[in-house]
Length: 577
Image (cartoon, one colour):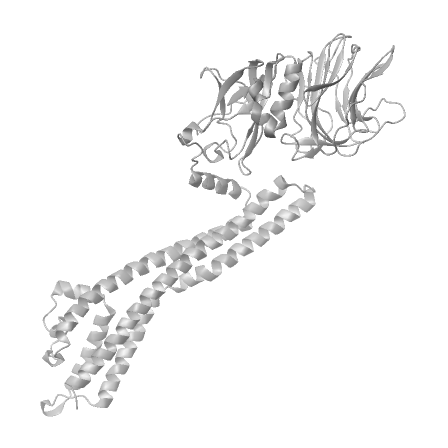
């Protein structure tokens, strides 16, 4: 990964210093299937190949294949390039991310707002956690965000790390998205007696207002914030001036120093304002406070690195994944899909597991039947070929058989040895041949005066017996195929049942909790659909196997039918009345 602050990377000429940079991971630059499911094996190594950089993960979702990683870049320089390495894929690695180590000691508050409708947590060393639970937004500028309605607020309690003397430096920054412009809509406020600091948007125009015993001063108006668009706001205060930045560029200034503050802060409204001023209506993300005046380069760096899209692409470029070879990104798709299925299975309900176990049982039984039947058909095919070779030598003169000698019949007139007879015994044609020979012997043994002949009725009776043998051999060939048909017909219905029940449960949970978001719906639906996949995974192989085996069985039955016709014709000719 290369950070480029030169003119090629959209140019940052002012000093930056130690700063956090956001790394967005997705399918295009990260192989989630090869990393641990919680991203705990991620390591960030500096350009020297030895120094491990501090980082922490704001969100890691191996199901949706996205992650947001904050990395501490020590002493970032303007108009320069610096590289670092991202490592992952060590199965035994333990979690090493360090949220507090990601920010310098001058950072006193960092809210990611990624908590799920809970009070915001401070990721800096300041320990300034919010007091109230906010209304969460899943898809904010960076992972989660905070929804402000104009009435709801979050209090940041007073603390030693937020205390500020008169004229003390300070930097405040956040991503804001205004939904409904309002008059003097407050985003952030802090009051201490007659002193106050208010950051807001007046009918869409961002402003900073500072009140001291000497009066109130507000920045001059500029271009308004576009509706429903994320914008980076920052306020930097020195002992002589307060500067308001919009998307990393200076927007307005005030020649004033900040008053002393020792009390709490309020997000979303200014409760101490006269006249009941309404709060900000929109969304807020990534709010940070520092006890130093950050440089213009630092503010521009933060805005560009967190913006995403083309701006971030110019600043932060990604090299090829070296684990994928020179071509890069030759990801192990099988490992990726198996990892996804593993993640999806975690959201399966009990009924889904029951369906999958039933489908698994059908698959095992169907597989056993399929393998056994194919082996049986292969033996039959081999034995039938051997039988037909012997039959061609015997069919020319059936009268040569001594039907009073069972051994002569079994050996097909002495052509087949004991070893060959074991092979022939696996052929349905050989079984029918022996049935026919036994029927001929039964009738000829009753002939008077040694007259060897078969009447028309005898020939018909022998055919009926042979047809009975054909039916029994066909039944043996078709035995247990019903398990394949059960897999074909029952698998999809079982899967559909599991999916319908899973979807019903998912929507019931959503209705109960009131969380109608992609992250709350997708896992349950994906888990439910896994049951249908299991059903189809059983039915499709069973269908192919059944079609192939049925064709082989039809060929075997056709061979028996032709042989019976030929056998009856031969005996009618040889033993004619």
